[in-house]
Image 1: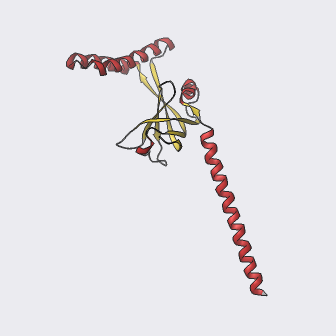
Image 2 (image 1 turned 90 degrees about the vertical axis):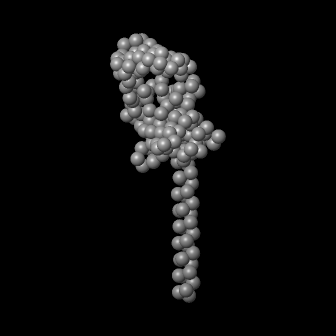
Length: 178
């Protein structure tokens, strides 16, 4: 009789533990699904980035490039050819090469770097010197266009700097593999 009671108690405890484990697993799956569902586009983020520096966001985009030396930096592209730099924080570590071409959702904090007007002018002079020295106009033309866009933005906005926004990532998940 005592053996049956003990055996029944062990079976009951095992069933309760299994049901608890299943509930935890379902909750984890729901949390993972909601992580990507919170994502905004890169274009949306960049349109309001100056107002949300220091805030946590979830953004999704296609991985176009990965820093192969450290694996701590990748770039996501939005629909309007805008790129956003993603920096992995210490806990996250880095990104895998297999992510290139895939769409990922990234959770992290928006940051801002400012390129000074002096820096932009120095880069413009460097480009002009390089073109004169080796005639590499194709690369120089692309860089020059970027510099001109920065100068135009500064003039239109009355600023002596050009903002570059990025995200320090605390987590990411694969949305769609290549």
